Image (tube, rainbow, N blue to C red):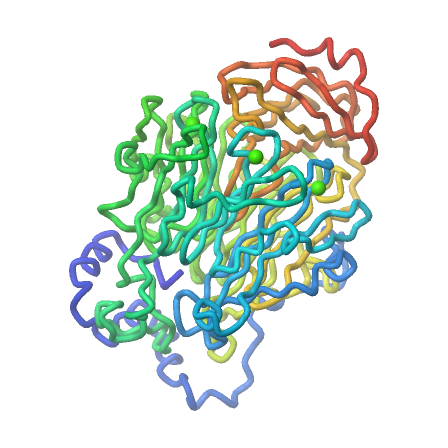
Length: 629
Ligand SMILES: [Ca+2]
Ligand SMILES: [Ca+2]
Ligand SMILES: [Ca+2]
Ligand SMILES: [Ca+2]
């Protein structure tokens, strides 16, 4: 999150000098001259305090009319009573600013997505002096409303929470919840009766310092989901990272000449962990053996995702790192990973610079069968679009694609490739918000609360910003952090749940007035695959195109999206044919018999369930016959 865009050589120099006091102008010298001059006139009690300040584009640029994509239904849905809190209001410490993730989970297996919202905490709560702020589990009532059942369900966490990753780790057919904390992590096992039990201690995955995010994936192909957890910074209550303290290498902490909270630069990092699932409720730490421990680098890990990026049938691993190189690991298939962060071109931006990478969107936006990535990062940086060129090679094409220039003033977090208009081409959304409250006081051309960004995919590697219409979901400014994307109302349109730091969540219902068709798949793995099919890849051939969707656990910003592959069909009236690459290695081809349906497909058995117009309907004969294993 801190100021970034520094050459790798410069990073090495700073790391080497980390225990030496930094010169007071260390940050300011990278600010362009004119801006530096302005900054020198500002600050607390500065001379510019009374001058009118132009509203930055991050909180402006709204239009009076246009197509409405999202409607903010937070209040009517019943979500506005829950409030996220994290640390002190002055946001003076690094633990106060990052916010938390959102997990979409159908915890009661009724076919409707429920919402898990991680909460933060504060020192008083940690010390038992006040009630800890609880996480929320909002049950979907199928009528557009939700009810918070976290307390009854036993999933309030009550720790300083950051990330969430949803998966059925014990293959019992019921999704479970991993929560990463500043403090011990949680693994909430689903008891099948609306309640959960925290089994993290027995599982051996609590860790205990600062875990940011998690992702589930069967990296060793034994049919059991394994867990990767990012470490952010090493945090010590007895040595808080304030300016000029030992915890920050005695450095000053400034942004454009303004004193700000310290970090992550100069704070000791926390390593990452890969836990192999032993199948008996316990896990074994394989981080070092697998080559993904981050032990020697201690980069500031945020959002990890297991996904097969080179189409060899094995999940690989990408990790966004704050203000340091981001990782891209290729699964060798022998229990180890090859670090291809530099070689692939994924770890740095187009100029070869590291960025403060927060979130990651995963999706095949070119419809060429390869997954691409978009990375949300700090303000003053373009948000990054990485095109997968095959052969484990990526090109960063932000400026060429049309998302670069527009996104520069925004500080991005939750990120998702979603086909909001169901035309068969993945669009791109970023959820934004600054970490420094001073952004609203000083002339930085950015703001503390920021509007979300939605880009329409105009094909041929190009995107266009969707104008934010006043009074709609895109037409508001938020303190956005985590975000999860999914079809919450089973109507074939992808909605968004946003977690705001220090505020209520925001539910954006997709009301875009297209008349396009769609299809969704709920996959159930067989005996040799994870039961929830996490790691499966689906190629849908329909409407003259071949689209790809993956079943993933983790992503966006330390969040967990709808795991049902969703395909926009445009005007096509034939739902096409799905080619499913199951985690077991089996490939299955299923002719989908109808549009605008949610099909359950069970490995080796074809279609085993159908939702028509939000209700179960008969499985038709041609569908069952269409399966070829
Ligand atoms: Ca449900
Ligand atoms: Ca389970
Ligand atoms: Ca495994
Ligand atoms: Ca689209």
